[in-house]
Length: 176
Image 1 (tube, rainbow, N blue to C red):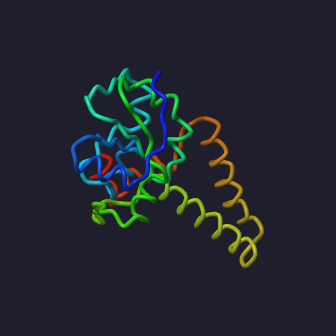
Image 2: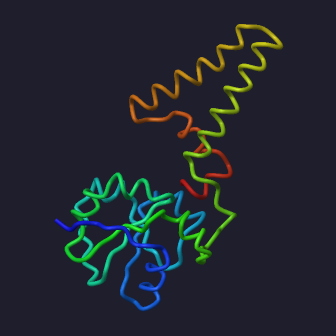
Image 3: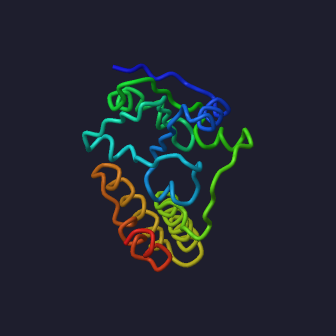
């Protein structure tokens, strides 16, 4: 099995320029489509873990995500898909941007679904608390309902709120 070591964003950029590195972004398609590194391949972690994908590109393969955490946590899993030399990019896309390296940003694409769920759940919870104090205590139930839904989502691996948000007009193009 290939051992994955960390490599700096600057070294990745240099290797991509010289044609020695293939950069693979393991974020989901909705995360990738809004902001990505030019010429990076998007092969989501979910596709790698579900499928039998072997990356035989004949170059040094470097994996990255947004912060570097997802690649570090899944280092052993990622290594099973590469025959040759492979690494993970230290600090992910955030470190790449901190090093003032170029990214492609498409603001016409909605923010990733996970963030939309977080924003919506936070907003509804806050509304439930405010209405519970200002209008009637029974409205605290809104916050309890959202909390229960989040707990169910975590336990079941499904998210009804994400399903609803995917059908919203601003997400139709991205998810349908």
